[in-house]
Image (cartoon, rainbow, N blue to C red; front, top):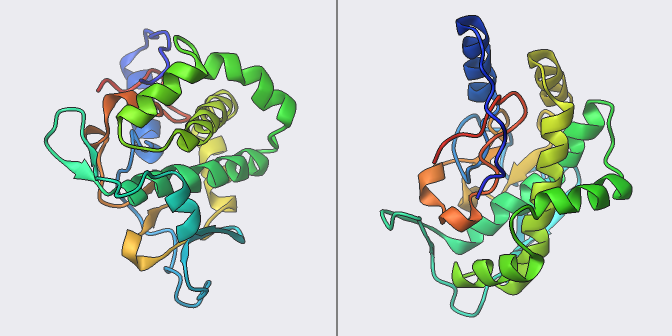
Length: 223
């Protein structure tokens, strides 16, 4: 459900640049894998019930559970070929919603409430909050997850607008290095793809695969 973006024609050189930037910062069309961006929670935050810590902000197991119905089942892939543990799926979004503002601040463009409010209409292109909530519950998550998903879209749109060159991307990533620590039960965090390890875009329900392109992508990745 990635927002449609216009395709751009380019020279072979420009196409190579786009491929390079996309490889550096390809998101979570849901939960891809890569470089470990943390040392787990052993020595970072030993508090019981911690799922992740992002720049001092603690995401708890209890918080994850708020977005899941009782006896939540794994989130099935759009093609039915695989599934993702529901808590892992939710954690991906909660971590990103903390990391995206850090990237924007590192690039010299701190997020403001006015920007988020102005970007809400674009984030809801083609749907309404009620429809989005209905899609989310049908995918197996609580209706409470809707604001999380919507905020992810709003922040992602800001990132796409602000980080448009290799240098901007590299500089911002360098400034937030080692800001994410995950509980080892959820794997590790890839600092360049901004993703949890072990999951691919094909493992997400199509209705929730809304962030398939990050800064540096000239056009959305085709699912």
